[in-house]
Length: 381
Image 1 (cartoon, rainbow, N blue to C red):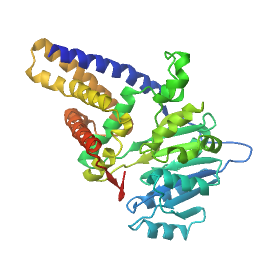
Image 2 (cartoon, rainbow, N blue to C red; image 1 turned 135 degrees about the horizontal axis):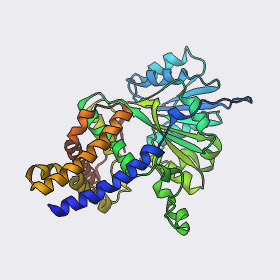
Image 3 (cartoon, helix red, strand yellow; image 1 turned 45 degrees about the vertical axis):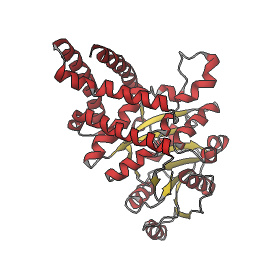
Image 4 (spheres, helix red, strand yellow; image 1 turned 180 degrees about the vertical axis):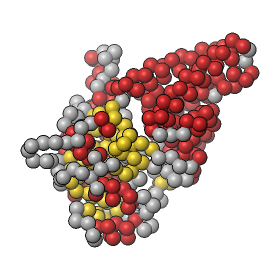
């Protein structure tokens, strides 16, 4: 058990270092000033791809139209929806002037659904700045104004929304995504290459530290065109991360923000949606690297489940060691709960959260080796 505790402690110490950095360095869009200029206000195109989004599309569109920024348009691409999304958009576009309801074209075989929808939106948009948001996102009224200010200092930005979690499984699973983000990747490395990386390797390896959240990602139009837009990632399931990598490869800059008090999202509304939604991109997020994916799965068990087991079964010294590690884990989780408004009691179920992800990981490996594909919005991905 001692060796398990040593491995767990090394991993937790690493997360302490990264988490502490991110707690102070991870920017918040709420801290950005609203855009003010004595010259002409640049136009912003808010682009929303929508396929079978009848439960959320009206809130998304309405919040987008209520921005206090003076010069914007809202474009919603109806990606061949089979539910009431089309009817809702027709109703809204019939009574609101700057809402453009775009009927999506059939998806070509060599494109995935979301990149194809976003590509069509980019062709219709007329703004100097492009803001892509998912249909399950809703914006506070100053979100676009702050985004334009942020884009004065960067070629692109991405915002990790404040996630609304309602059901038990949402509360259990979704916060772990943010915990992984805050404890494993220094946000500074997204906008600038690590200083410890030799200059000879920065251009070659720096883009591997890129990250993004496709729920809200915004571009200066010139940057978007220079990287080839969504056409450059037309076959990528995690197109957001690939866009961020492409930006860095091209020597441009992307900055990450959190969306507390500016950008909100509820990713999934049932356990089935939650599992299938993460199933399609969990393994892909590791580059489909089986050894890396499997090693991380083992490490998660060692760091986040075994200390709880040792706390019950170990000797006194081992129990003290394990209790210390558990306290650090809970402190990190509770800080994020406080920041994003989640229930801190659910974080006490950390071992169950890890078990859920282990099951998801097994399913992802099964898909990989058998050729099975996840279904999302009525399409295979």
